[in-house]
Length: 203
Image (cartoon, rainbow, N blue to C red; front, top):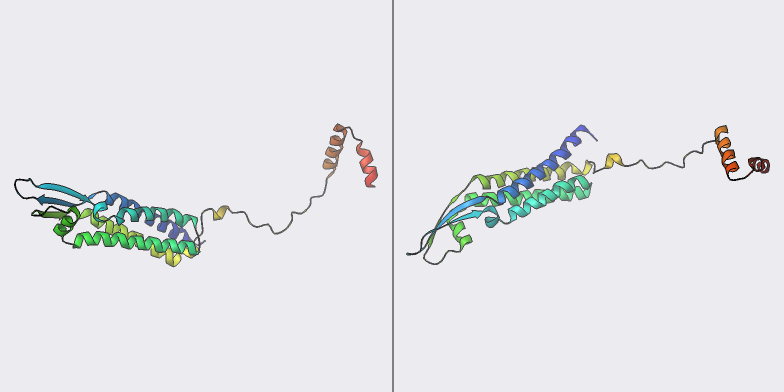
């Protein structure tokens, strides 16, 4: 395996694992802070909407990427290419989920999720750091996936260096030494046999 391949495989595995961990982390954080103003005399209500509530595919994508990181070490050839495609798709989903939250109307998004009562109004603000982190995770996952698709077919699999070489033929028979014959004679005497009889028969 070349030095370049030695660097690429750990890089792809680390990229998928880090992206998965970021996705799971950001999915549990608050992406939108919303205030619902209800008709009098009802007081306003403040809601914290997490990434999992706004984009359920974010934590799901994180789990997929963590599984992909482990699979990259275990599979080879076409199987690894398929894992790379899966990681790239998961990265695209993460990036789109973060961008959609950043670019969409926060008030409308919060109102759609909260299903406010008639006559109420919803105002929301985006906690931009967490959707941006989802975008970063998506880019990292996509890069790891594309690297695997383009280069992963030639990377080694888990435990390849520990595989035994195939046998090329039967092991050569070692000639018996005087020491071996002496040991056989002692074993024959222990069994109550006469070792000289065996030698006579062989002659």
